[in-house]
Image 1 (tube, rainbow, N blue to C red):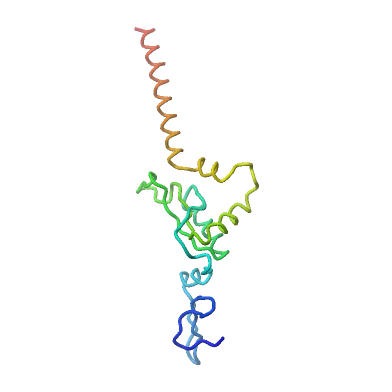
Image 2: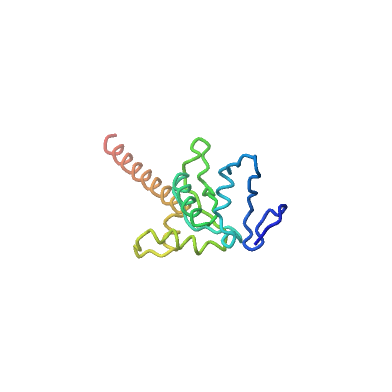
Length: 160
């Protein structure tokens, strides 16, 4: 299908068009953002963002984003609440969010590489929920403090 010179998007699929180099003009290499945008499939880029994975740090998040992008699924990383430490910006858990139209495909893609360990999606979400991990850590620290206080009190009573 022939496109006119002033059109910016393909009529049939909606992808951005690239102007061919004219005689004598150098061919302009696309930058990284343009290359990434061309990989995205429009049919999986619609809807509100949904959480499809929880990763432990920025490096894992970028790896998952790369896997999703190779399949044409756009994604964003969102920092989990409660872990915003200015000194360690790359540390802390992140949520991998994809548009609603691509959420099922993304979950399928990300779980296809992992062997089934008998845990459902709810179990995985519950285990990786940062607030649950923080509560477990706080409870453990409180128990350790109480145990230390009891031992110190008993030793003090015996010695003095």
